[in-house]
Image 1 (spheres, rainbow, N blue to C red):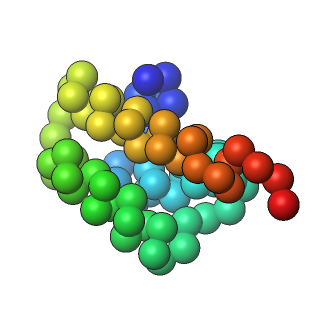
Image 2 (spheres, rainbow, N blue to C red):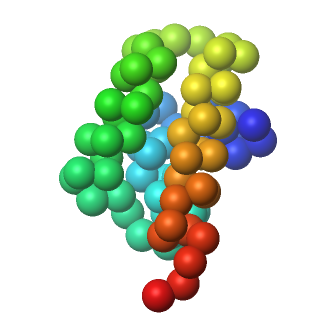
Image 3 (cartoon, one colour):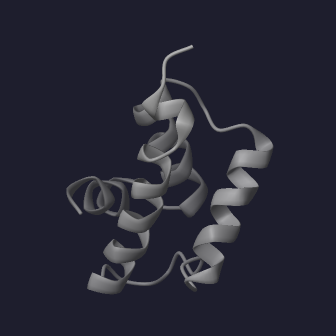
Length: 79
């Protein structure tokens, strides 16, 4: 939850949050497909209303995406 809370606190839009998450996890920006996939993932949780206030549910949604990113092969294995 700490990273998810930081993303929600520091960035205004879901797209900005996704890009920053990718920068932190992979040291690169998300490509278009990754951004779309991440936005779709969030949409399934109903997260894409950027006017939503900070809530426990919102933090949980972002924490779930963070876990998915940190559980990816790209994060776990070096090429």
